[in-house]
Image (spheres, rainbow, N blue to C red):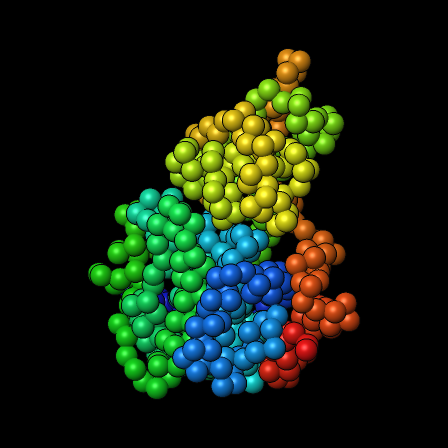
Length: 462
């Protein structure tokens, strides 16, 4: 191994090929492809996605290229990666890797799909690119220390995502190790993502993961043409780790490579809200269901939350206890708790302007307390835990500790549950027959000889 951290990472990526991937890793690549594309298709109907598509039309980017999933349109390949990525991040239903606290599917799947369509890559090439992308993106997130990275105002899905997207695209384009080092060097100049979107629920959160996917394509295309970047963008004196965190662990970038795969550590969101809220919501729903509690039974609900997530789902109190938009509600533990108690679920259709004005939710929100619990943080970031205590008006107390929320690898959604999630999200876009073809196409994607055929499957039929 050299002292050049980027070169070491690239060499590891070069050694990862479809032929040496375990069966369960290949299965998870397909599994997260279905989840990410299902979310993106529904996310394409959001206003932010419509505005982005209108913009692309206005700059004449629509002359063929990559599929805009869930539509009948195609755009230039790098823009296809951008809009599909932004749409995938529009619903708060995208996948998460706990240890690195980022959303790999929003970046890696759109970048790998666009790159694959661009060169007519095989499905096997797509799978290995997805695995490489998840590996790079997650390892960088863990090396940065997500708690510290967040505290400095960075959004890791954007900052780390561009490196994962670049690694995935470089794999598909067949870049040499030297060219991939250059591509990552160029990616480092595009590593962006600000948490300031939380202040008012700005669309920038969606844009920056789409931009990461887009930038990964560009970086790899330029490097293929011998455009140069720094040779150690990750570990260099002014490199990524140095610039983006005050407490890094460079060993996490390459140590243990091949002994396990990051994609196996990835979680699915069953609830349409921030992942930091999900263990608490699981606990609330379990207590309410097991004890047949009604809204009128509730005196107080106390949610023990991770300190790392407090600034995202519980602070500032004036916003979290009085969300004005559906987006703010998806990052409000008090709203999520109240809505889950009233409706018995927290699906996408619960986050509406009508429900934001529902007096029942407004009244119940006032009974919710969010308390950062240092004990929970001892297992963070590998475990995202929560505790829930519900006290009733007649003096009963019910308690739950959720160690692995639904969707975590230790408490995973089955393929059937995942297919149901994707079906529910896309039912107004695809016919039943078309959806079945998409599911079949994904589950057998490694048999595909030209990913442009698969891209056609993802188009909405007129």
